[in-house]
Each structure stands twice: as structure tokens, then as C-alpha cells.
Length: 108
Image (cartoon, rainbow, N blue to C red; front, side, top):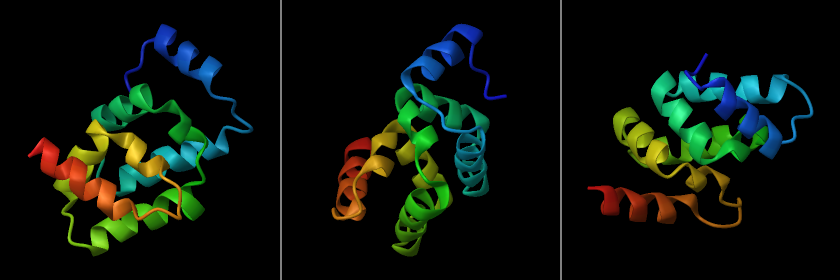
């Protein structure tokens, strides 16, 4: 559904161990609800397939909400995270905003 070729989808599947289909679906749903386009989500998954096994509600949603609460617009957020999705993989202990601000500045 994200425009991935069968070969690329197989490659991602081999690199990421899925416990169930529900987790990747919840990640995709969360990204869509935050304004990411299918093309951006496809880029994110190509670059950082491990994001598909992240906990959408406990890990990703709080990070996205934190960045939005700091004033990041939807377009800034989606553009920046599409280019450097590993920001979403940063451990909770580290302030995600520091990495996001750095990457955003570099992109601009």
C-alpha cells in the first residue's frame, strides 16, 4: 500500500522480525494521523524499517506529541522526520528535541 516493490518489501520483512501484523499497522496508522503522506512513510520505512516494530502508542506517539508541542508544524515535522527517521528511534532518556532541532537546522 506504500508503493514498495515486492523485492523491497521482502527485504524489509527479512530485516525486521514481526511478532504480529498489528504493530506495523498501528505505526503506519499513527504516522498517517500525524500528516505523513504515503510517499513519506515509504521513505521512512525504506530508511528505518525497524520503526515498524516500535510501540506506536508508548514510544512513537509521545515523541511526535512532544515535537508538536514545541511548535513544530505538521509540514516541518513530516519533512524532517522523513529525511532522518532515526530521530524517532532515540531512547526516551535522551531529549529528542535536541536531535530534531539539529537536523531541522541542517536541512534548512
